[in-house]
View 1 (tube, rainbow, N blue to C red):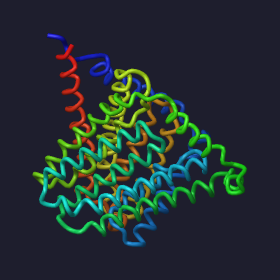
View 2: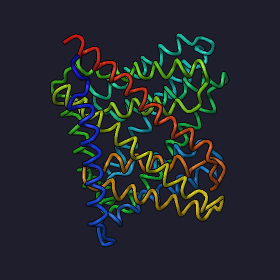
View 3: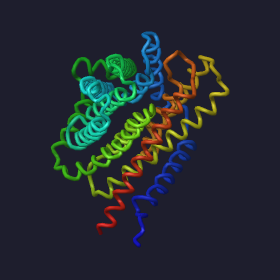
View 4: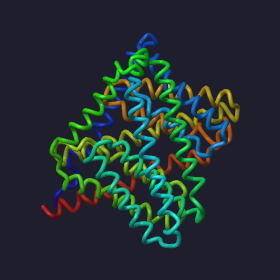
Length: 381
C-alpha cells in the first residue's frame, strides 16, 4: 500500500516546527530594546488599548472583535493601515448585511443552513484567491458565517448582533488608523496627497496579481476544501448548538487564504504551514495566558499589563523573520481572545476556553478534509 505521508504532510509539519523553533531562538538571542521593532510594536498596543476602552465605554459586547481589528489592521505605513482598515470595514458591512437578510429565514431549516454556510465559505475563499481586495472577501465571508451561526443557535433577531459586530470592527479599525497616523511621520504627506506611495503600491500589487493568469479551476477546488470543512462544522452546530464553532469556521477559512501561485503541492504546503503556525501560536498564547490568570486574579491593572505585554510581544515578533510572523499574529489574536472580555478588565476563563477550543476544532476539521482529499488522490493514482 502506498504511504499517505508525503513531503507536504508529515515532513512539512516537522520542517515548519523546526523553522519556527529556530526563528524564535534567533529572535531571543538577537533581542535588543534599541531595535526599532521594539518601538514600532508599541503602536498596536496603544491602538488596542484605545479600542477596548472605547468599546467598554459604549457598552459593546464581544469587544475582542474591536481589539483584534485594532491589532490586525496596523501596518508599517499609515496609507497601508487605511487601506486594510477600509477593506475590513467594507467586507464586514457586506457580510453583516447578507447575514441579517438570510439568517432569520433559515431558522428551523438545518439543511438550508449547512448549504448556505458551505456556499458562503466557497465564494469567500474563491473570491479571495481570484479577485482583487481579497481581505474584504475574507471578512465578508467570516462575518456572514458568524451571523448565520447566531441565527441557528439563538433563534432570535440578528439586528443587535450584526450592529455589535459592525460597531466593534469600525471602532477597532478607526483606533488603529488614528494611532497609525499620529505615530507615522509620513502622515502629513499622506494627507496632502504626496505620501500615498505605500497604499498605492499595495493596491497596484493586488491589481497586478488579479491581472496575472490564475488557475480558476484549481482555485475552485482549493476553496472546496474550506467549504467542506465549514459544512462539517455546520452540521455539528445545527445538531448541538455549539457556541465555539463560529471561530472554528473562521479558522478553516483563514488558513486556506494563501498566495495562489506555484503547484498544488506548494499551495498545500503553505496551508499546512499556516495550520501548524496557527495551532502553535494559539497554544502558546493559551498556555501563557492561563498561567498568568492565577497570578493576576481579577485585578484590572494587572489584566491590562498582561494584555499589553502579550500584544507587544506578538507585534515585535510579527516584524521578525518569515518563519515566525504568522505564529506571532496568532499568538496576539489568541491572547486578545483571553484578556479582552465584555465586562471591564476581568477575565472569565470559560469564554476564553470556548474561543480557543473553536480554533483547534477548525484546524482539526480542515485536517480531516485535507487528509480525505489526499486519500482520494492517492487512490485515484
